[in-house]
Structures are given as structure tokens and as C-alpha cells.
Length: 159
Image (tube, rainbow, N blue to C red; front, side, top):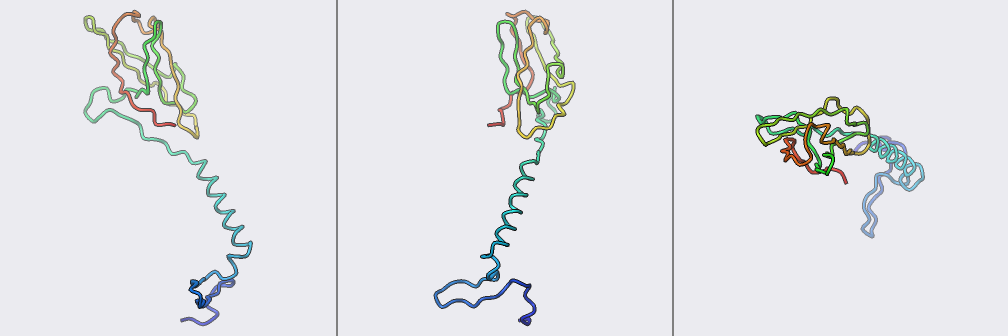
């Protein structure tokens, strides 16, 4: 074992007590306020930095080889009397103008697809969503037309 000068200042190896206590390398330093304050400061800084971290979620795409893989995943879609409302992911800046739609008619069947024109570049600490309403006139549809929505429907990942 190295000599007594080997241990850093403030550290002391205490012998095991006869009552079964363990060896302690920290000695009196842990019980002093310096180590507790230092630990508390480091833990506080780490917690603050962790709260500021934004981990982008990977984009949700259709399975490989599937048609229309670039369609925007929807959290919900609701057909109302005058409009079709979709719920999509948002970082706080998503607007209706950020979306394009495609309508295709084949006989009586009408298919509808939504895609993003622009990505939402806002930085948000929490995942968000926005509801966008498109009137049937805007989409070139009649309110009573049956519509097949092509976008994938996914579960809301937030709380």
C-alpha cells in the first residue's frame, strides 16, 4: 500500500469500527458542507441542462415499399358538416398554409391525401399538435361525398 502521502487532501481511510460500520474513504469531507453544496450545485446544473435538451422524434414513415410514404401522419381526422378537420404534429408554428392536399376521383370513390409543404422549424420543449380545418369547398368536395383518407393514422405520443 502506498505511503500516507498517497491519499488526496481531505480523504482518509478509516478503520472498520468494532460495531460493524463500513470503511469510508471520504472521512469528514462528506459530512462537511463543502461536499454537499458541491454535489447539490452539480446536480442542479445537470437537471437544468437536461430540461433544455430537445430530442427530435424520428419521422414516422409508411413501411418501406409502400405507396405514398411521404404523407403526413395524422393523430385524428373528423368529418364535420361543413369541414374536414385533421390533427397533426406541431412544434408551435404549423399552419394550414404549410399543408397541401391531393384529391383524386375514380367514379364515385374520392381519395384525399395531405402532405407538408414546409417543416415546422419552431423549437418547443414539449410535443404538440394542432387541428387544421379544411372546408369541403376548399377541397373541391361535396359535404355528402364519401372520402377515403390515405394518410396513416397514428397514436398521439404526448400526455
